[in-house]
Length: 87
Image 1 (tube, rainbow, N blue to C red):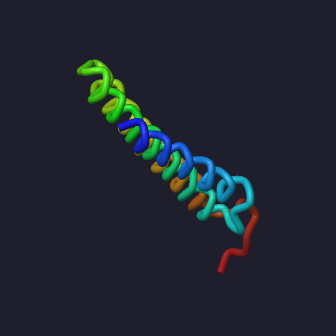
Image 2: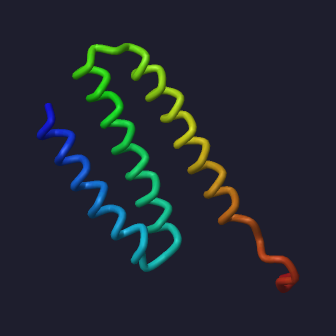
């Protein structure tokens, strides 16, 4: 169990590098989403390890917030530029 958590933490570190050095904004957005999902996996594993059902509830709320964050960021990135051409 702890090996899984350590592997996920290693994946978070590698993905964090992509978040910082991502060549484009969509790459950074995908990395941010991936890090959130990995934290979600850690919460679920900790829930199983400590036998606490409340952690599952926290993971569900966190998962919904990750999803909403991605929707908001995508909507923000799709806004047309102000003062652009009227073609």
